Length: 502
Ligand SMILES: NC(=O)C1=CN([C@@H]2O[C@H](COP(=O)(O)OP(=O)(O)OC[C@H]3O[C@@H](n4cnc5c(N)ncnc54)[C@H](O)[C@@H]3O)[C@@H](O)[C@H]2O)C=CC1
Ligand code: BAL
Image (cartoon, rainbow, N blue to C red; front, side, top):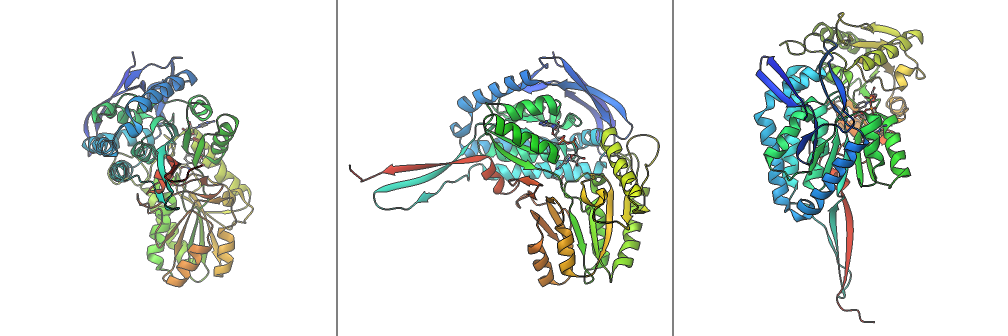
């Protein structure tokens, strides 16, 4: 019988006891893992264990796929009107909203995110995503193709059936909503694996699925390690599509697993090394604020983090002075993520802390200048001070590789042509942020940059209706907006002979 985790919160927005089931959610029921594995969940602000939750194995994935297949064949897909799928998604959004403060508290406990951000950005935006796709569920349309009087040809956008979804730890509820909402709107059933590091809000979410009214097996949540549950999803012959957000290395493994098994469709949202470009003609005060947020938000644990900051020579000194001050202020606001006034939390885990500190050390060893930061904050938890390097060369690891921490490089440039070449000198192509008051330049540079998203005079300003995804090694496919509907449907062409006789 699966256990529960109970925690009493006394936060500014949520005072009360949260009780969540720590099992696997398969076929509408909480079950124990077949192999009885349990995984520690750590509070990154203290480094202490919060609880243990079930970790699944291949056998649990098999059970979840069976449940999802049965649900798809008997109670979901086109057996259910799109309007009903939309109503259930809306109900889920309402239930998350009714539990907003508890979700936010759990997210902060498990990730170390600042509470206000967890509430307004993570949980708040995931509610928006469920509502947005609830609206699409009865608007999935094929096309008729006019050939001649003898034929009726039309297309249907059909669901894949069972889809697998593997999500990371940097935005646990955000990425869950990006994956589940469009897949459900288009009529698929789901086996989702949260990150084994951050399962708490996914488990809370699972407890709302039956209450929202979903038939058993439509949404299954199987927590566990990537090397077991993640790999089993990627290799499963009963899964027709997998959607993944995480590292480029794991993305390659998932693509390879698909190639070596059933050639399932794959959507990948991977790493980045995004440029932030500030031209002399920018509104520099605004650019400094956006660039600091664009790099340090979520402790730099964003795939779109503007971690290479290119500044034109005329505003370089002014920018660097104030950008450094912003980093300093952010560092001074580090602390208990539940406390009002805290602006900067810990990295997610000891592993990520060590990885980010190793990048900082490599920058120092390669001869870059630590302009500010470069050290841990405090002596408990996984806090790292916002860090800015100057005096870098293009070949340094801190310039080329995704750090996924509060660490950026500031580089001076002279001309537009030069900065376009520098910005595109990367294997990644996820996002870019451009600051200029010259509209022609903004559009010229936006079109020349090789990235799936370009933000002009802002940074990381996501919109649920606008597609998101990567060029180059940052990914395959698009999420959000109507584009996500395409990634969760396959097109069937139907040819009907009206008048041709043989
Ligand atoms: N694009 C993004 O939003 C993210 C990028 N990253 C990048 O990845 C780096 C490493 O972080 P990790 O947590 O190790 O990322 P990861 O890519 O290993 O983990 C992401 C998800 O993939 C799963 N996974 C791991 N190995 C798998 C496998 N063989 N098959 C299927 N699923 C598997 C994990 O359990 C987790 O749910 C970070 O430093 C960062 O650079 C990490 C998280 C999110
Ligand atoms: N993975 C989408 C949000 C982000 O990490 O930037």
